[in-house]
Amino acid sequence: RQDEIANISIQESGKVRLEAISGEVLPTCEKIRYMCSAGEAALAEEERTVPALLFLKKASVRYYPLGVIGTIVPGNFPFHNAVSHIT
Image (cartoon, rainbow, N blue to C red; front, top):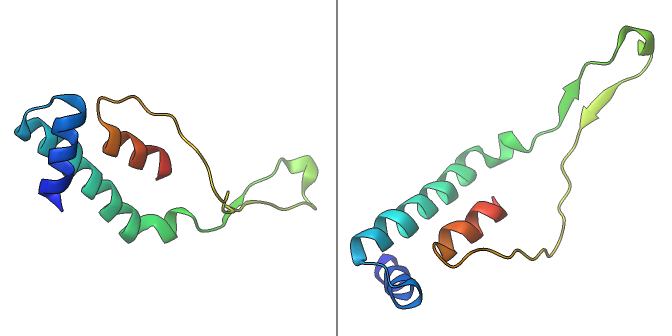
């Protein structure tokens, strides 16, 4: 749907087609592709080290879904900026 996204970007921000495709479509698709391939590993639970005085304790980082969130992005690259905040 490259043409559809590019046309909306052109109408909304006044970009030329090349800038709409190279600044909106390609980076946005690349971020989505990366998150599809590496997202599960990036969100996996991580074990952390603890100070020596807390040797009986364990620490880890777990990611939980936030549910519905809102983001306010500038209008210069609306699709790219929205995906950047989501990923």
